[in-house]
Image 1 (spheres, rainbow, N blue to C red):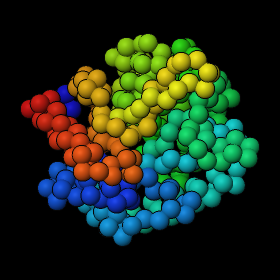
Image 2: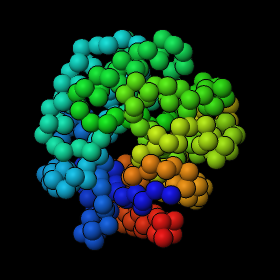
Image 3: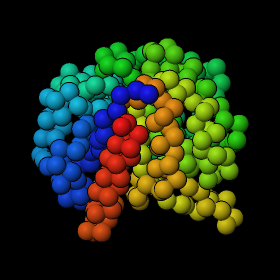
Image 4: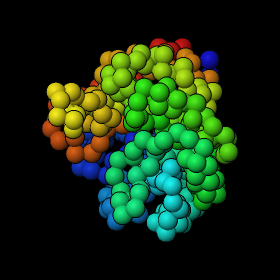
Length: 292
């Protein structure tokens, strides 16, 4: 088994995150932070206390970069992509990020430029576009780059093929897989396939980072009484995801980082803030149990 991975948080520039996480930062238990550096590209304001955390972890060589708006599988390379990559290059010169990741999928198509990433047809054309974008991503950041698996798919075949497709996708830059366990859990619920079985379809030797989070159910737009599990980062991590984490950590020989995610503005009362800290402490204990 590999050495114990570092445990950290996905950083949010919101008052409730600040309140929920302050105790964890003060205790020194947050070994690494992940920052969605491209939020500022769209004019989002970063609170001074949050920027101070970014700077501190950058200086300590403990800062991970996570993009959310590049849209690496868009069919067209747009001016917005060019501007994004210029912004990324500047940010990665300014701060000492260890690596950079993005989401598998696309969020730009025609006049639509922002939103949640969507599934893509897994064919040779998509693969070619994606490989070119990952090369541009690596050139801009000058860091190892990776992709996060998502819980979007057109059908069961796409669910089963995503791991293999991501492996081919990353081969051009020898990239890493950011394995999101709650997304696997979503696929388990939505497509009735065991998450442990799905895990084995991914290139586990490429896993450098793991995400753990919670989510919620949304009604299907089909009009039928069907609810879809989504990776919304607005609840505690389910017990099934924590159990999957134990299994995954033992199967990923190159794992270096475990990041707990929860969105800002989802912890605005003391109870939910306590739940957030409770989840993090559970992960501390989980790592201590595995890496004795």
